[in-house]
Structure formats: structure tokens, C-alpha cells
Image 1 (cartoon, rainbow, N blue to C red):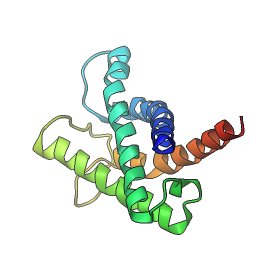
Image 2: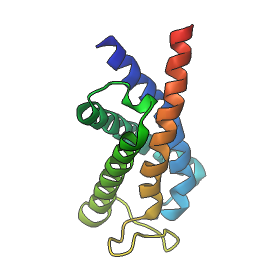
Image 3: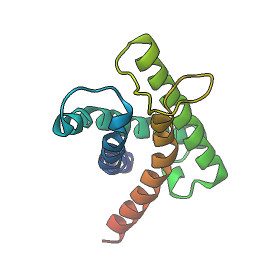
Length: 147
């Protein structure tokens, strides 16, 4: 149990700053009011949510692949799981937030997935960052174990 908590904490700590940088970078693609500092402050909460999404991807991997360290050498199945789960979660959240809950909206600059109207940037975020986060977390955990 302690190992599982250490992995989850590491994933979250690695995930939040990387997702924060992505959130700030994509802010011009969303309709927002205020200055850059307000934009950056607004990105903190979504970054925490993105950290939870990475934990969900991790949890799905633990359930489906049956190993707590599945992400350290994910192989084809692990990468497929990351991509499929990240895509499904991002698509669901974006579609629901934009078209059901009206939580945010896109500027004309946001590229969208054809037929779905969902922003490409947040979907790519959950396709690109989780493998990077898992790789960096593996390095960090291995380093901690050696120390």
C-alpha cells in the first residue's frame, strides 16, 4: 500500500507542473477575460484536475494490466491504454464542459476535432503528457529507490 501511495504521489507531483505549463500555453485558445496573471491563476485548478486524470489513467492501468508499476515499461499495451484512456477522458470532459455545462468556450484559433467540435489542444494534452509524466516519474522513483 505504501508503494502505491508513493507512486500516486510522485505521478501527481510530476503531473501538475507539466500540465500547468500546457494549460498556460493553450489559454489563448479559450475565451477568457483578464490579464496574463489572472489566466495563469485560472490554470492552477485545471492543472490539479489534470493531475487527477493522470492518476485515473494510472488506476485503469493497475486494474487492466494487474501491476502497480505497469507504466515503468508500458510496452504496446501500456501505451495503448494511456492513449485510449487519455483520449476518452479528455473528449468526455471537453465535450461536457463546452456543450453541456457551458463552463468554457473556444476562440476561433482553437483547432477542433472534426465532427465532434472538441478542442484539439486539450485532447493532445492527454495523449502527449501522460507518457512523458510516466517516464519522468519512473526515473524519479528509480532514483529515490537507489538513494
